[in-house]
Amino acid sequence: MIQIFNTIEEINTKAATLFVVSAQKAIQEKGKFTAVLTGGSSPAGLYKLLASPDYKSKIDWSKVYIFWGDERWVPLDDDRSNAKMSFDTLLSHVPIPQENIFPMYKEGVSPGAYAVTYEQSVKDITGPDGKLDLILLGLGDDGHTASLFPGEAVLHEQTKWVDAYRLESQNMHRITLTAPLINKAEQIIVVAFGEKKAPALKEVLHGDYNPTTYPMQLIKPVTGELLFLVDKSAAGTTN
Ligand SMILES: O=C(O)[C@H](O)[C@@H](O)[C@H](O)[C@H](O)COP(=O)(O)O
Image 1 (cartoon, rainbow, N blue to C red):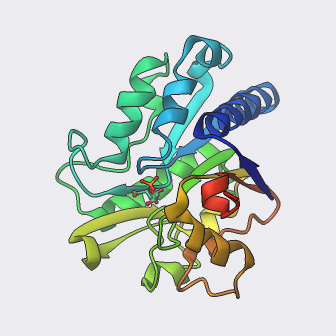
Image 2: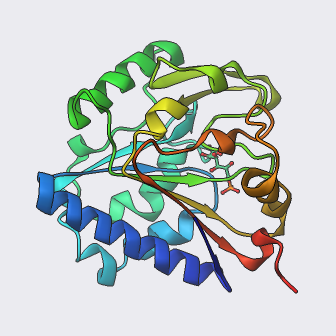
């Protein structure tokens, strides 16, 4: 499903409200809430809103567990780090126990080895079914999501829940949740705004099924809900 908004602020308000509702429901039903944060630049405003008093006060952060959808394999203090962005805008501003936060990077470990460790961390928290409560995703201008980039072998991964590989186009290693794990989620929210997203979003939603070129098309929750929160520019309806 897609919801089109006039402004980024409206998108962030909707996404923050859905995050709070999902957290309250999961904590009430299971005593915990497992959330996956996305990187990139789009979610920064959402994370700052969640860290504001009106929203953060509505969540029992002691029962929240945070994972990432993907990461650039760079140190946690590197400005390219998705974890750094998330801490700077959200996680350093809410009372969440550090042991409940699972950065997708570890110094002195290979990305491939850490992918195995990370998968076990997900299993330890979610249980063997790997069902995460809420996954936030962004949409790359080229149609990628998380670190599921066009033409990469990881798009065809059906067994691993977490994988790592060298993304030659960016001269760096990436570590990412795979589509099979993402699609187990209860709720998946994609936040995308700006006219640069319009060509990819149009293909993802209305084009032929071509996930090798548009990896976002791999995201089809098995039992959960997929919601695109976009602005008119991204939806191509600015007229
Ligand atoms: O590591 C990353 O870059 C992100 O996880 C990536 O998947 C992001 O969500 C998209 O590239 C959109 O990025 P923007 O929000 O910056 O457009």
